[in-house]
Amino acid sequence: MLESRLAMTAFAHYALCSPAIEHFDFDTALMFSEDPVTGGIVYEKNGVVRVPETVGLGATIDDGWLRGMERVVI
Image (cartoon, rainbow, N blue to C red; front, side, top):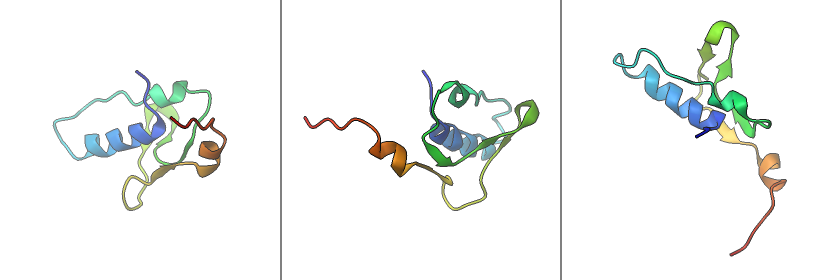
């Protein structure tokens, strides 16, 4: 399974709130060819992940990216 950077941002917040979590794999979002997320975690050198200092997750799905998707009505 591949999680977006939105999901990785939520996981990073979760991992930071518990001293029981020492290691976590946050790289799946780097495997996407497009990144529809605005804000969220930032991947830095040597595997360091920076979490936004905003209210909530600090990440959303880009409205422009959503408008460009195919719309299907069922």
